[in-house]
Length: 102
Image 1 (tube, helix red, strand yellow):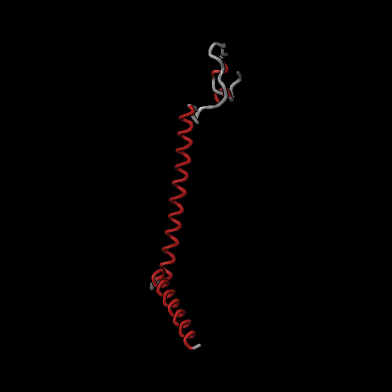
Image 2 (image 1 turned 120 degrees about the vertical axis):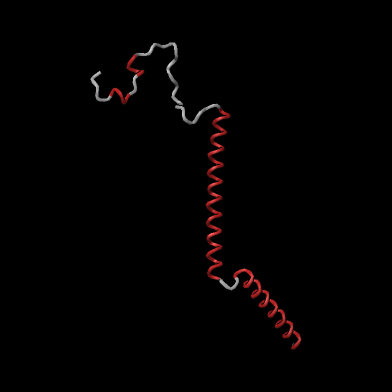
């Protein structure tokens, strides 16, 4: 049994040493500053990813409207036919008629 105890102690000490080396490599001497730096890096990466996704959505919308032939700034209400006579009141904007007795 003493050989078995020696083997288990050796394996445990090797695992402890590896864990300590890994922690020292990842965290370093300034553990608090390293964790703040990592958080700031992750936050800035998140902002960059969100900006890229937003730009992709805007670009996709622009291209899809261009390919379909519809401008996103024009109304979807059909206009009056050009052959139909229009009254002068329909040509004046609504905001210019406010406050007048027409």
